[in-house]
Length: 145
Image (tube, rainbow, N blue to C red):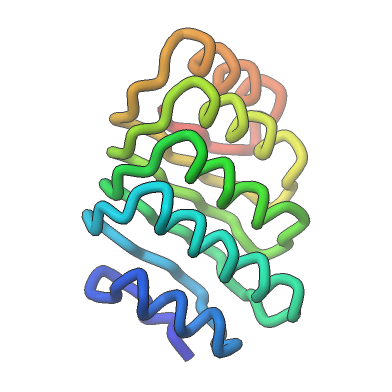
């Protein structure tokens, strides 16, 4: 079990745990700067874990990892239909309007999401508008941007 995939875990540790079918409750990767390529790898491992039915991840914290729109979108696509993730944190990355819009759309269709963090990203007015609209549409979700 790798519920301790916390602040000292590397992306490789998390990938190995997910690919081995371990129950990864919390993914916490801080300041590792793996960018979109690492996000794509994580998305693939999460998708496989979901398809196997072994994904029990409830929280994904990916702060300060140089994740851009395509990396965030890849993770959101991998998580579609997941019934366990309640918290997503992408603070301090490089997410712009496209990623913010994708996150707003994701929040609208995924009922388990409770908390979403997208602070300190270069989101423009279009992305802020999309997130604000999602926040109004789904008042039970805590959206911080």
